[in-house]
Amino acid sequence: MASCQTRAAGPTLVRRVSSSKGMTVSIVENDSSVAVRVDELSARRAMVGSAVAIVREGELELFCGHGLADLGARRPMSFHTVLRVASITKTFTAIGVMQLVERGRIDLDTAAERYLRAFPLVPADPRFRPATVRHLLTHTAGIGETAHPARVLCPDFGESVGPGRPVPSLSQYYRPGLAVSAEPGTRWTYSNHGFAALGQIIADVTGIPLAQYLRENVFRPLGMSDTDLELTPSMRARLAVGYRLRSRGPRAIPLREMVTTGAASAYSTPRDMARYLAALAGGGTNEFGTVLEPDTLAAMFHAQYQPDPRIPGMGLAFFRGRAGGHRIVEHQGILPGFDSQIWVAPDDKLAIFACTNGAHRAMLWLPAEISALMNELLGVRTVTLRTDVAHHPPIWNEICGNYYLAAALTDLRARSMIGAGAQVRIQAGRPVLRLLTPVPRLLRGLPLHPDDPTDPWVFRVDLTHFGIGTGRIVFARDPATAAMRLHFDLIPITLTRRPPHHRPDGIPEGLG
Image 1 (cartoon, rainbow, N blue to C red):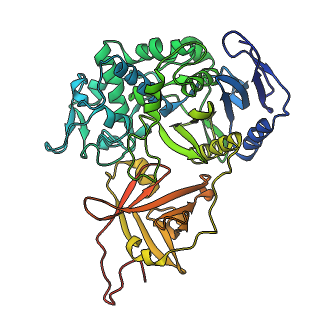
Image 2 (cartoon, one colour):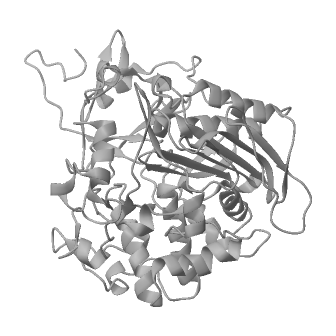
């Protein structure tokens, strides 16, 4: 593997050249339109360092490294820089689970507690159905975002330990058990704890610690020699420093280790992530080996939780979407100082990895920027607001009202987006979605733009102010209760309308 060096101020641009093994790379001139696009992204966004790798047909097509991995050492971001990929770890853990499914050692629709021995899952109501392995893989097991509400204001919601401190076992961390606060299968709540449980299931079923299992069964077969849940001395020497951008400049963030290992602990390099993407876009196989059968990986990308057929929903660990007529799966990773993103178009054998080690609000704009880059590579126009679809006022009475999110107050990711709930009302002669949060723009309201001439219940909102682009909103009645529900396509969160109250003048709320 040839090394690529660059000045701190400029990008490293590398393209794969022929080799029998290992994605050998060489420096090329900055004459690629895609490279220019990535270079413009780096110039547009304030960041310490960034890495972008593009893989097509199992080969590295382009790598761009910008800025610095370590400001103090003046070490540039390179193909071999070790980065924290955070929640992309969940996809590694899911592949480990699916390997055991292939071997007949785990059944997706069996109660997770059949395999989980280190700690129990404790339902809030004894009448709840058991949480299955499939529920855990789709964030629908009823497990909240915070295992210990008293620690919710601690770093990483209480899921990490400081430098030099031992990482407790999950049996210690979840003592006396991991709470299941909602009926499994009835709602989607993003949770690290569900994937921590899946990692423990791998260890309990195989008798092998999770880090060792993934090293031997996922990373090594794919040639990912610099990927691990634990930092080796070699990796530590190349580890990027994570930064928080302040008014006086970047501030280094101390390294904290995650207790929820199977959800967010992995370290990797752009080289290794390119090899991983080659396998994801190649039916489970890259030039080094195979980790899953094609049908198994295809099932992971298929809709496993879909609150409405017009919403892409969740696969097994992977979020789903579409770019024009192209199928897309993706996952984001967020830890203090690090934001990462993978996008895969499996039918096109195309994939992108991107990471930054210090950027303002990258958790919002990085997915949208890399999605736009994927669209460009696929030849698909980025979705914008439509102006050719008329409003359908007869349905306004049915969609207007106050909507609530069935989630705990300590489900902070959901609450940071939705706040106390939402309201749909008519404002200046058009429907507007207000999210009841302290964010002024969301509180003022987002106009609902009709998005489908054949379906008046489908709208799109403009989120470009937040760096996200646009998002789809769809309305539908719950088949069991007939309550109106509001679905988001960016993440499969569902809000339910409260029973309407009438004002003294007889006009339903939201219409006046």
